Length: 601
Image 1: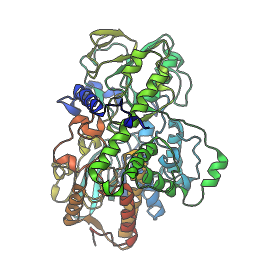
Image 2: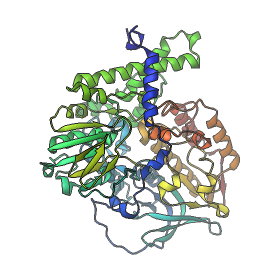
Image 3: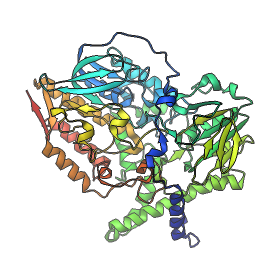
Image 4: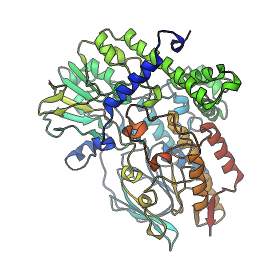
């Protein structure tokens, strides 16, 4: 008998509990509760990893300029190189390739989707991930491997931020200007700025008055803590009192390392994460040799997406927490008689599977954490896909160490900072160091996160074109912005469980379109307004999103509880799901017609 079928499980009481916990955390300021790192806070953005080197400004011309040196830029650049486009210039504010993996070098950083489907271009580079969930240094090195293999370092501009992108109608190319004085042109531009690259700080009163040491997890200060990204002990924290503010996916990974290094660690929690079993293990070379046949990674990607999105394949190759969530839902739906599989009944089955899983996750807290009061406060009271699910085998255990203290704020957050410590619940905790595990901007405007606007045809800016919400074809092309392409999640597959799959398919598509334009002598390519409108209308015909549903506790999945209005409807995926979208996009590319796009001489 499953937990939700037991007579002692009161599902209505669980629903009330979830709503009560959500309501504690609802705030009228939404994303405005966080601070942008400007002015006196700009020092939090300094690069602690790579010295900036001076260079002369670029004033040349390239075929393709790509903004963003993470997975999006690397996979698109690789596909463009394969298509014969040699002069691809990648521009990134970091000191090397890697994107979020360049910045996130905090102790314990690792992917939470299996490496075999998370790390792109494994087959092309011949790399075997050393473990099921690779750690940050290996992922960063893989990014460098891709850059070297495909010659993407040749034209790259690092420690460089684009300030302006402007379409020159007279010459059918883009003018690119940067903060390093660059003023060059490109026939095509593409942008993959990623959802996790603009750090944010909680808007806590007194944050600038703290007199101790502080940093954001994406700029980890190993000079202060000791240790290194590969896991060497942080020996300089011995005898230190450290506060970490935030208990999302980053904190789940780095708290165990801090707990072993500090004299006292205070973990300030507004909302607990759901933390399921990770069960990481080394990759068996013999097993990998058996699976690594031609086309293996595309098959694994397709299989993971099919399992995770409920398409009912015959096998589960990945077998992780993400596919477990989906298999539970699928089992409950398939248990319904065929004539009863209405949308309403399937949503009930989905909720039952979720109640069951979350009950197991809460029971795991009781089984692992020794102190009953701490265990109770570490339990997540919301549906699993309301916030990013976490998987870890050491986080909960860290609270059994005598120097680790959970400071639960019951949804209110930290009250203020003083010169010597952190105040929560009316009590001041004296600390030597404050670490902000407060994440990145996700729900803010695209142009705000990019740090620049695009000026397209007739002088229209992208921020103006999207004033009422994002409008694209496939999440890639936008009318009024010829020869410009986006690599991101929305309005395509919107596969949040494995973002690199979205990026890989977008990169493949962009390379195909640019390759076609160059081969046929076309100077411009642009989505028609009719095709864009039809795509947006198609997206609006779906049933909406499961992630971050209206009843969810606030977080970046639901724009901090402010998912409403027209803009929300445009941050959705293909109505028939990710599997259907990838199959559709494959047919669209292979047809060679590129329906909806207009090519001009």
